[in-house]
Structure formats: C-alpha cells, structure tokens
Image 1 (cartoon, rainbow, N blue to C red):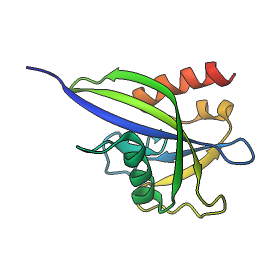
Image 2 (image 1 turned 30 degrees about the horizontal axis):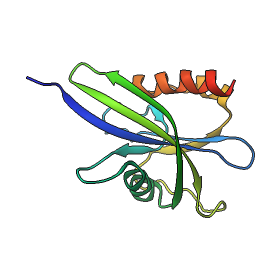
Image 3 (image 1 turned 90 degrees about the vertical axis):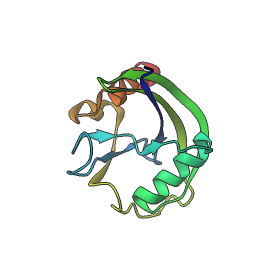
Image 4 (image 1 turned 180 degrees about the vertical axis):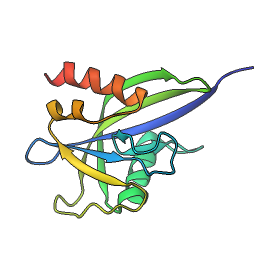
Length: 135
C-alpha cells in the first residue's frame, strides 16, 4: 500500500526590516503550538501559488503576492510523507495587520532568532537549508 503524500506550501515572507514571518499552530491542531512558515496544504486541482495565497488569506486575513520558489524538501513522518515547497512572498499591502484567524500567534524574526523557536521536523529541515542559503 502506498504511503499518503501531502503537498504543502509555505511562505518566506520578509518585511522591510529583514525579518521573516513565522506563525504558531493552534493548541488543538496537529503538532500543537509549534512554529512554522505560514501556509498549508495544496488542495486537489489547485496550483501552489493559489494554495499559498488562499491559506494565508484564510489563516491571517491578509493578501500576499507569491513570487519564486525558494526551497523544496521532502520529509517522512511515521504515517505520511510531506512534499514541502517554500515560496518567497510579499504582503500585497505592507502595512496590513496580521490577524489570528487560524493561527495562535505570529512573530517577525531574524534568521538567527529562528533557532529559539520549536518547528515541526519538515520546517526544521527547510530552516536549516535557509540558514545555509542566506548565511
């Protein structure tokens, strides 16, 4: 029997001060209260860019412009595999207020500060590659 494959997209959203947006998963979600790059699952018939813009709108009530793909990684959890693609993004309105619609919290952090937050394994792999890329 084939393992379940889940395609997930994340946003590498950077502000004018060079800080990246990370969000905290809700307390009752899978992998509760861990930090992650905002984003979510790609639904059937949806492109990566569409899915990412939709997820961010649904989770935080803001519009983003999805730019180029920055990173791609694959992670095997015990019950399923994650195909995780991270895209550089920018807020359509830089002064838009981030709402906590389907996220518990958010922070704007420098790359070197990200190590102070606990990320899910798939995000940790991406973060390690990002630190190597940008460092």
